[in-house]
Picture 1 (cartoon, rainbow, N blue to C red):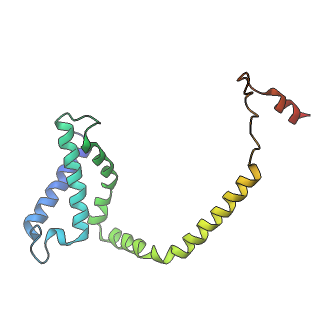
Picture 2 (cartoon, one colour; picture 1 turned 180 degrees about the vertical axis):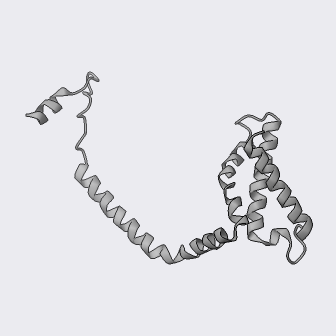
Picture 3 (cartoon, rainbow, N blue to C red; picture 1 turned 135 degrees about the vertical axis):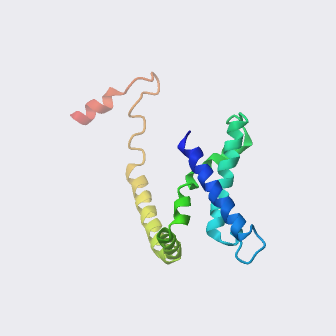
Length: 147
C-alpha cells in the first residue's frame, strides 16, 4: 500500500471523527467554522477527488487533473495538528503587511539593476554566435577577441 493512500485514510478518519464530534456546519463550534479545519477539508476533499479519478481510469486530459496541484497543500495538514506550527504560521501571515515597504524597496532595487543591465549588455551578443547566411559558427568574432 502506498504511503499517500495510508495518510489519506488516516486524515479522512480524523476528519470524519471531528465532523461527528463537532457537527459539520450549523453548530456554534462546528467543523467548518474553524479556518484550519476548512483547510483540512479542502486538502482531503481534493485528494479524494484525484483518488477517485485515478480509480476510474481518468487520463491527464480529464478536468479533475488540475486538482493534483492541491497535493502541494498536503504537508499543511501537519500544521493543523501541531499548535506550535499554527502559531508560527499565524505570526508569518501577520508579518506580511509589515514587510510591504521592504518589498517595494526591493522591487525598485531590482528594477534599477534590470534597466542598468539591459543598457549595459544591449546588442553585445547580436549575431556573434552564428552567421545568418550560412548558419555556421562565426569564428571571426572569437579570433578578433583573442588578438
